[in-house]
Image 1 (cartoon, rainbow, N blue to C red):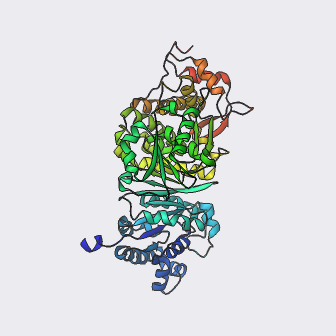
Image 2 (cartoon, one colour):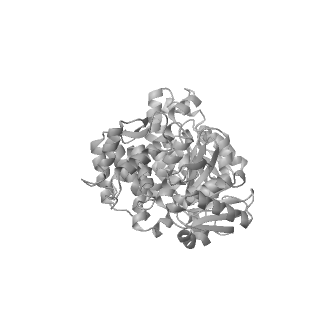
Image 3 (cartoon, rainbow, N blue to C red):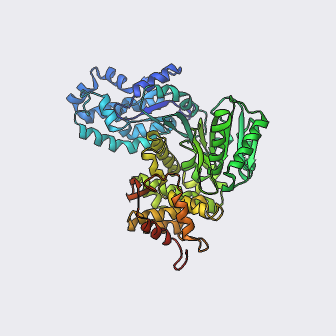
Length: 519
C-alpha cells in the first residue's frame, strides 16, 4: 500500500472506438507527459494485430490478455498518460486500478464513431451491434470518469489539456466537464473543497460581484481579488438600475478589459454579473462560481445573462459564455432548507427532460440532503452543457430547457418577484406544463414530489389569474403565432414550440389556485 500510494496518478483516456484516444494521447505527449497506448502495447506483445488475434483466439482470450497488460500498467503507472482500449473498462481489475488515476472519458456518439472507423475492427462490422455496444458501455464510462471531453475535433484535446492537468492539483473527487458552444468553450470544475483550495483557472485581476450574504460567507475564499461589488440578495437586484450601479463601481475600481469578473452567488448574481461582464467595455471574461443548487445545476452554464424589467423576467440580456465555472457543492450546506428545496425544482426539470437513469434517481429521492446530491448535480450540469453544445441560442434543443418556465416566469412577474422563489414558481409551472401535455400520471407524480419536499403546489389566493395570463402573453419567446410551450410526452420526450388554445392555458393556470380563488 505504501509503495502504491507514493506513485503519482496518470491521466487515463477511456472511450469507445473512434473517440480519438490516440489523438488525445498526442496532446498529452505535446504537454510533456510520457504516454502509453494499451492497444499498441498489446499488439506488440501478441505479435499480431488485435483484429487477427481476436479472430483466431476469440474475444474471451483477447480480454484476458488485455486485462493482464492494462491492469499491470495502471497499477505501476507513476504519472504520465495512458489510453485504454474501448473495452478495457469491462475488467474489474482495470476499474479498480483506475481509482487512483485521473480518468478522462472521450464522449462520442454512435454515428460519429462509426464514421471514423473501418470494418477491420472485429466489433465494428455490424452497425446495429456497434451502436448496442456503445449503449452498453456508456454507463461504465460515465461512472468511471473524472472528466468528460466531447470527442468532436482533434484540437479540443489540446485546448482542454491544461484544465485536465489541473485536476492533479485539485481536491480528491474533483471532476470536470468541457463545455462547448458556437461562441466559446470552457472548463466546468465540480468538487468539494474547490473554493478553499485556492485554485484559480484564469490569469489576471479578479473583480468579485456577489450578494451581501454570500460575499460574507465565501468572499475571502476567492482570494486575490482586486475589488468587490455587493448587491442585496434576491430577484429585485436583477434590474437595469442595479446593473448600472455595478458597472459604475467596476469603473471606479479601475477594471480593464484584461481583467475578469467573478460571479459569486446564485442565479441572480450569476445573471447580473454575467450581464455586466458582457457589456462592460463591450465584453470581459467572467468566471461563474455558483453557490446555490439552481446555479450549480443549471444557470451557471450556457452563457445566458440578463436582468428583469417590471413587465417581464429576463427581458434584457446577452449571451456571454463564461471563461470557467467553479462549483463547490460544500457551499450548499449553508443554504436554508427552503432555498435547497426551490433549487431542487431545477433538478426535477432536468431529470424530466433527460429521462432514463437520471429521472429514476431523482424521483426516488425521499429527503433532501445537500451532501447526497453531488452525483445528481454533476449529471444535471452535464445535461445542460450537452444541450447548449448542440444549440446555444434557443434555435432548437435548448428551448426544451424552458419546460415549466413560461408559466413559472409569469408567476414571478405577476407577483412582483417577491412572493415566490424562482424554483417554487417553476415547480408550479411544471404542473401547468404537464397538464397541457395531458400527462396526467406524470403530473400527479411531480405534484407528489413537490409536496414531499415542502414545495408549493398551489398559488397564493391573493394573486389574480388575469395577472398571470397577461404575463404569459408577454413571454420573451412569444412569436407572431403566439406563445410556444414546451410540452412533455413522457420523461426524456420533450417537444417545443407548441401553441396551445388560450382556454386550455387558462384552465391549467386556474387549476394552480385553491378552489374558488384566482379571479
